[in-house]
Length: 460
Image (cartoon, rainbow, N blue to C red; front, side, top):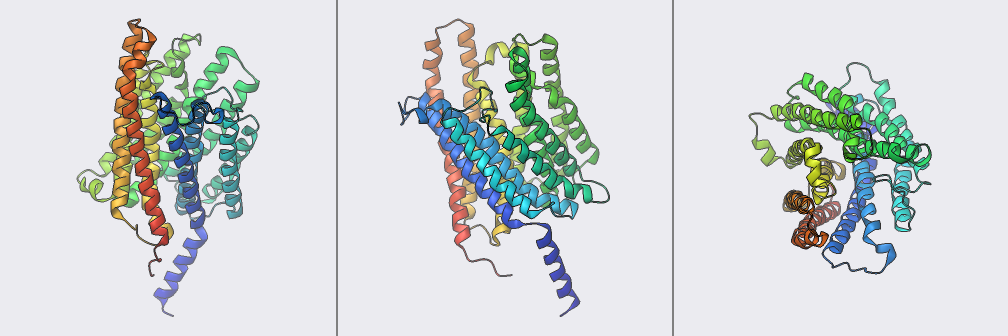
């Protein structure tokens, strides 16, 4: 046996010991199952708005309940599973240490699928709590809290064991593990058991937004700082800007949540603080966007030729637009127009699907061939997935944002409520068509995965 062969075998052994690729794959499968569930629930709700609900009169299929399944399945089912799979891939490579215990990883995997599935069942049978994004039944909350603690322990252990400088990705991951645990406890226990009235509303507002800013945002950006340099084969443009982005997120994002409750009895100094911090976050996000676009300056063709990179940068554009839009919509002047309108729905879809779902799809597009040890069965299908998802989302967001303005102007003019629902109808039809296009993109991905799994593995 030659020295080169021994070295190669050693690298393969170390790689196998570091990363359990099977759990990455199964997290992705679970994520796609819950994304399918979420999108079907969203289509059901959209059909209700255009008076084509196929389950009229059946309580368990009522759109109010399926709307909660829609949001919970995408946040805790798709995003959480997708991120956990990617973390099992990235953290051992960044630290050169495996997770604390692979058996614990599989236990967390099974327990988390139970938590998400039981949440959906509890919501459908009327056990939801009256808090947006915190509808999980009360008997699920302690289980979810313990699960988040175990996730933190499993991933923070290899980070603690590493020596030398710590990559900015790991800064984001460490913060996310701590913030998510605290945010979930704040939103699901404090309003339920300790405070009430406007105080509970203020805490609920913080929870709603911190779930985005302190859970999915640090995980998403941390993974971008890991995957983008690998795919573009260049270092990130500015390490200094990466630190500005991290500390700006840490300082400003936790203060934003009250902007969901402007013009309420919550003290005005909290409302003003939320407005200022939200606008400040847009400036922080701009530095992050500049950092990533500076990294591919002069090599723009890679966005066209490398599909995962295209997913990543499409998500970054949507992220910039989302935060720019947010810095306007949180002002008291703008809130007079768009509060309670479909503008907010369009905004939510642009951030949760246009940003974080796009990033996870890009990571899946990159990792599935490596996990399955074979190339994609169809390049056309992965292109269809990208374009149906991107165009469908862009049409839906633009449609609902424009409709929100029309609705707000109609209500401000004191027109009858029926007038706003009448002119909303064609916009809702277009929203349904856009949603079906996005679902068609998901079907293209699922079909491609199925075909790829059936292919014979590539020879070493």
